[in-house]
Image (cartoon, rainbow, N blue to C red; front, side, top):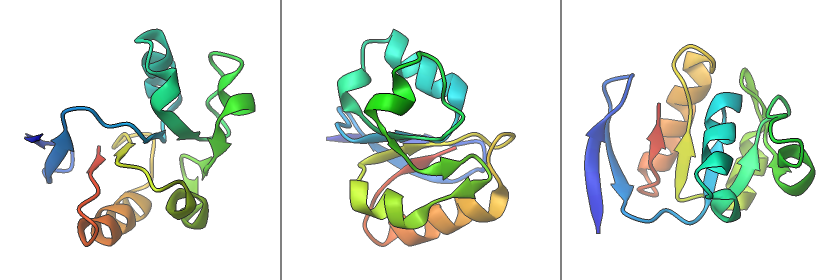
Amino acid sequence: MSRQFIDQMHYSVDVSDKPVRIISLVPSLTELLFDLGLEDRIVGVTRYCVHPGRARKEKTIVGGPKTLDFAAIDVLQPDLILANKEENYREGIERLQQKYLVRNLPSWV
């Protein structure tokens, strides 16, 4: 089951009620996910996700907020990608959204 949301880029995003493979492309969102006890669902973070300290040590690095590693993202097979309009670059986010719409993978900005 999923729910539909409108993100910051005005895209309609269908998000699973319980995503289990999450990639965070923003340090503050990574920290929030850890604080919410969802660390076991996080599979990828950026090299700038330094809080908590174990985030970069235990999770796969998928580039930086403005230098996404699309191959690394593909390998992780996420079911949710979290990004931010101000922190990530528009072309990268649009590329993720276009690419993953085909696979019905939500990228929430």
